[in-house]
Image 1 (cartoon, helix red, strand yellow):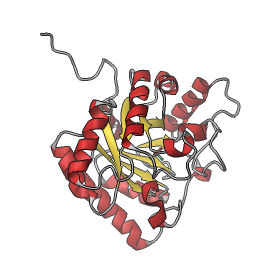
Image 2 (cartoon, helix red, strand yellow):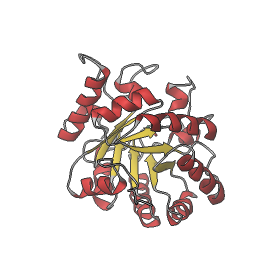
Image 3 (tube, protein in one colour):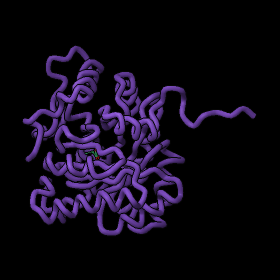
Image 4 (tube, rainbow, N blue to C red):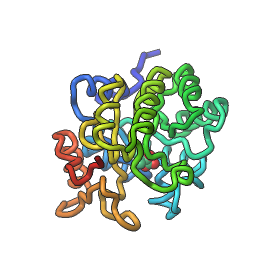
Length: 273
Ligand code: KIV
């Protein structure tokens, strides 16, 4: 029997992303929901692709991510994974698919076995530290999503910037550290003031990826449909339409990738203070 490596030559792994943080090289990421777009993102050289439960809003036309099911996440992960040869695949655990540690384990394993996920993402709430610990102990890589967590939009009272006052900022710093200690491999910050995002990035050793979290994080992620200018309603302030003036979708994604790596995206106008 020949011994094969877990990832094809040149493929992005979690350890490569961790090294990129140490070397202060920016990490790039986009969401994707199907094989064709995944292949273009892969070709553009983006480091990792997230099958986000944002698919509920941008693909299914819903107002929130809450109705998205495990079966739908697995279906989209499967088809996205067919388009990837280099980029790492991260997949969201949908709302209420990780209400108990047992349920979290079962569903994370399904995303990996059936969907091809290499790392799963869950939104941080009071219970999740034990989940992260359990998943990590079982060898499942985890990204913890902090800040604006769309699965709790009704509790948060809307899609708003998080961590603007001292108590909530302090809680977010503490949560990031606790999650890292529990075994989280990555942290994603959504809609967080840039200074707080910078502090959290310096506080933890794992890569911190931002969306609406300023430029001083280890990498950036955006929703594919926002950068293509086809999202319903107003484009979020932290995003940018890369199709404007671009010759092709590939060129637009390459420009996003280039600007993130050069530190020119996000600019001040895409950032919260
Ligand atoms: O579901 C999603 O697309 C996300 C991004 C906003 C990071 O979680």
